[in-house]
Image (tube, rainbow, N blue to C red; front, side, top):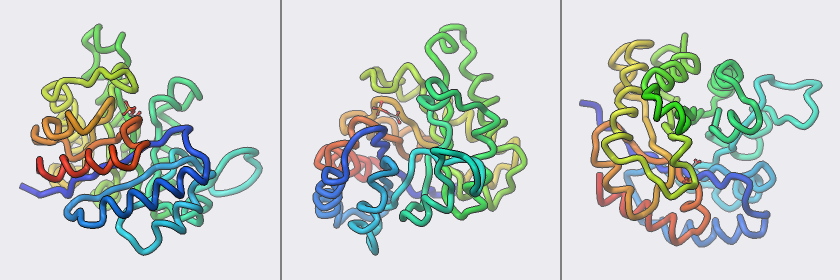
Amino acid sequence: MVKRVPFIAGNWKMNKLTGEAQAFAREFKALTREFAGVDIAICAPFTCLTVLRDELQGGPILLGAQNMFYEQSGAYTGEISPAMILDAGCAAVIIGHSERREIIGETDETVARKTRLALEAGLRPIVCVGETLAVREEKRAVPHVRAQVEKALAGLGPDDLSRVTVAYEPIWAIGTGRTATAADAQEICALVRGTIAGLAGAAAAEKTRVLYGGSVKADNIAELLGTGDIDGALVGGASLNAADFAELIRRALVAV
Ligand code: PGA
């Protein structure tokens, strides 16, 4: 069995001004200095990226953006290209977060285009999938998530997939305090891996990291990581405070 390095990514969403980001980075760097055997990312608003790049330069904490556009450059007022986020210090980018799918109108097609372009640019996409409460209650979570993964990743080969992370985030668990049970989260994360195996083979699927997201905190990370197919977490609210986020990662390290 392949041993995957756990990956904990913070998603700040639309929070923090540059001064707050800088203070966070200084505190968080000090708190996580001794941590080893885990990949850590902070996915920050565009306006905080260069400040964070300067603070995190040369260290192990990866910087990520929360979105990018699906073209390289041109007449797309208000959009940000992969080259721009790379230039701002990013190694990773969240693609297709449910808030963008639900509120901004992101589709499976734009998610697929962005994922390909991010890979071409040398970024590590964190591709988000997950079902609404209505879909879960109708017992359609499995086909729904399988279709999202197939549409986002179809046609990618094993090399590309080794740089893709998929985050399963049930929409009803995001920011609600209501976490999926570890067993429910494991079931869908295993489904994600199985879907990737169907697309690109079992060896590629074994290397792809699958994260869970939705009200992950220091108190529940260990149980989630103990399940087999969950390789880490995409963390919203609990990533906003440096001490809380560092404690969450410390507990993740104890669990793996
Ligand atoms: P949450 O958000 O941890 O605040 O539930 C997770 C996410 O939306 O990525």
